[in-house]
Length: 80
Ligand SMILES: [Zn+2]
Image (tube, rainbow, N blue to C red):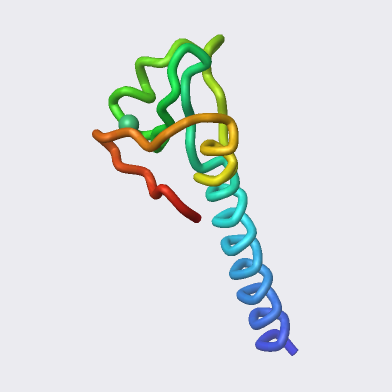
């Protein structure tokens, strides 16, 4: 009985980790309202963007549809 519960717990944890991974990838890129370049949030240039100008993108396609292009420093993907 205890083993059964542990398995369920491990399964639940795996589902949660999976869900968090998807959420983390959902807000994948950022850009500045004052530029037309999108970055990985970890990019040195992304960190220079003022919070009031920060634009978030859920995907490369999302960024490109809004007129942004990939950063040449952090090289985010041009396609999903
Ligand atoms: Zn960048």
